[in-house]
Image 1 (spheres, rainbow, N blue to C red):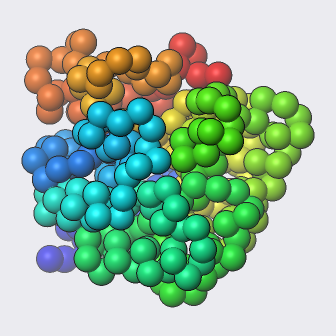
Image 2 (image 1 turned 90 degrees about the vertical axis):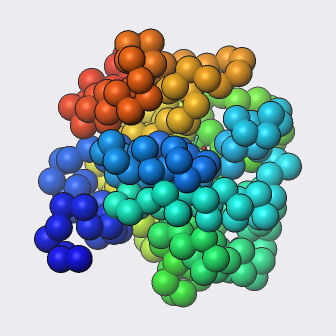
Length: 270
Ligand code: KIV
């Protein structure tokens, strides 16, 4: 396949070019091959096998019980459905408890599931791990802001970085992690003004979820945009099935709204 083919696999380099050119990056989660193929065919740039699968697939209350084996099972299934989109796998809770353990686990994602990148939660405390993975050639997305794996420490699912000190700390976390070699940042539930500062100071793509349309791209949980998640739908999400006749149309509409910056609008932001 020619490197000029429009269906060529999206790479880390392409994602950085998209940021540089102001082209928004449309990301969604997926957990199986059929949905992965549908997202791939309908313009999604990045597919994340999130540990949100613990909640939306397994019916758990938090993401904490999700295991490496769960992630590998779903990661391998999603990989089989993708030809074009960039594939990220989430490091589950405790899989990165030490650098040694994290290296083995991230290596399994790359070797056994064909991941293009791993995502891990944490701030500057992950500096050593990010630089080790970078040295080994494993691209990293660093997840800042609300980190669901730390829900018990945070005392609930709440917006992060509202206070001046916390905002400064997050700006510094973003700097340190980019310096350590991270190729992407993800900001979850962060005030728009802070997300804008982080996006402007970073050369790597910054993907938002509940962080405003100022980021370089957006991500949502697939089952939320399809209106099939049980229970509470977060403020930052949108049910695209409400205005679409079928799933492919809903995904296309999400991608179009991310690309033209109409999603997220003020009602989805903090
Ligand atoms: O686990 C997940 O799906 C995530 C997204 C919500 C960003 O981390």
